Image (cartoon, rainbow, N blue to C red; front, side, top):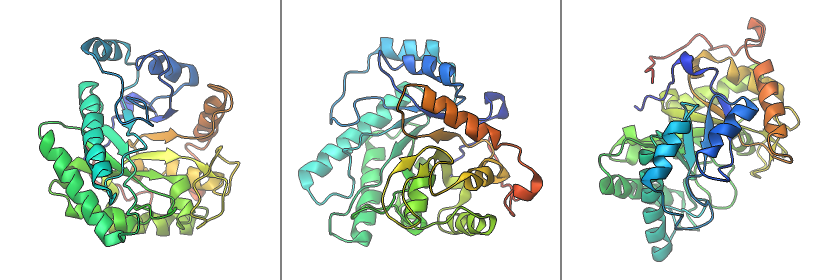
Length: 308
């Protein structure tokens, strides 16, 4: 089982996905401007197969400017490890290897990846293909320490990962489960049919997560409200508290001791740079340390931790 927890010395581990306009290192300036203690970036253009070369100087500058310890990258949206198209699959493998290599060179420990879409081949076929593809990627870079975090999906089309069961199957099928974890997106989970809005509903969802995936395999949270209803299978992010998920769900999660030390990042709409992130982060922090009667039932059930 991977170990994802960060030490409390790094702060409350709440942040956002931030722009790298002007260079990867500039994201740290933006983190300071929005008061983020964790962050995610794209290490290259998210809609291109090949990105700009990552130079040694880029890596040195990134390390020099690093003011936030928990940093993640999000892999290209083009990657589909479950695709039925041979050429597309070949490109996806190469692109993921590149994403993990960039993260390794930047001393980043987790790369978020959309699991993929089976394109009509069926869930079981797609799940098997994703697992074997992850094995191929790892075989190409066996000494890299970076973990691939499979993001929960909203369930649109033939996209895989909308159920905890599917994610759990992928983790069980890979040759080295320590190299794979899960990124839990609150909007996607809600859209795929998992309720988080009441204490009982939240507990049932987390119990199912633990049963199918294992709480210890969760390495990151994306905190997003949803514009659409429970089970809509439509991926539309909304500002915290302005959508159908509601504030209570985020209060439960932020105060759940089982996820203490696991970074939690916004992917909410950005109308004006920094303004929306500041507002959403302030809202999240206002929910920390809520009264005991607002905490989830199982909050005291904390597993073994590994501090980074």
